[in-house]
Image 1: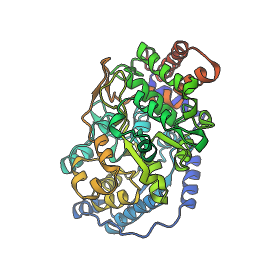
Image 2: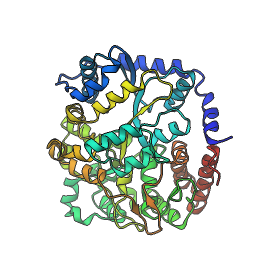
Image 3: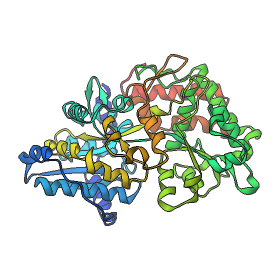
Image 4: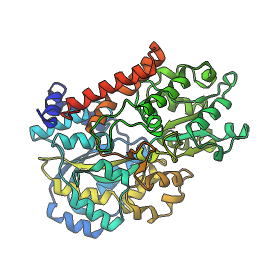
Length: 482
């Protein structure tokens, strides 16, 4: 059984009612949407109107990833309606949340049943490799090459997640900053700590301890290693910065259990168990899910956290005083690096076109419209500092992309970083898209490892060895032999 056959088989139980389940999800998403925020619809360039002429009167069905801010959903909705109006096509666009339900299973079942939407946009690092392995999506190399000729190259991180075996399997839409650190500027300055003093993870931990004061409900270390995507990001980031890795540079050979990984996990274990650091840990930090650090940051009780720019965007949109007291950092160094690796966590939202869909040609034209010009600028302005260009030339197409928010220069440095980064142990990041790594992260092997250490007292080397074996099993279950 090859990995494609295994993936299909493994999804059968969860996807037995997949197509009706997706329909229900779509109906619910449509029912819960509020009216779009008033704004200006973006005109469709003439060359795309001409290209879409052959599809006039025909429908396309698309799935739109739910945005963090409703105003951003409204910007996408207006752009899609404008495209339909000017081209004479019918676009049935439905908002979905890919974090709810088994999105991969549902879409795989829909493809195999011959009843699938034409296109969706999804997070490249999380979904595209698996959809490719399941043979659910179409090669879009021609479209990506055309867009790059017009708008410039996409970032290396996008290419790493979307280009498999020399072909593109997703059309880059926009980039989202991944794994940035957000620190309380006012707390740090009150202690005389400058930005320039914060270079390594050790510097960060020391500063977070110094600014902590439980009597004032101030806790520096606002990050959890409990089961969550945020926990995964923190643990893997520290391991990489210490010189460890899930896999060798082929993305297939598991090399997790190494002296570097053990040292990195020891650093994290000390952070959460050594009495020295007790004062900087917020109450209940080990029970946080992905919303825990968001809530603590916005409540003003933590001095630093690792997160996407969503918490920054929310503080901006709600007028929270935290917004004006935030320092954004691309990341910190470790023993295995001389620069932060966080640029490898930059993710790309990408359009995937489903195999066997009814109108993939029209969907591709729609994608080419949404990625640039006023359609994209309107989305970026409504997204609260969460959405950035995917193509190099678009960064300079309007002053907003560089100056619209104090965070944008940091976002630009992450998105346009010269990759790959090389650790002292010889690993190059980003590594190739890996369905095995995705499966291991989805199974929360990293956070379970930390739970064994922190809650059960398991020795770090033993916990790392157990995690290594679980990762190997996840790879081999996908047909990636070790």
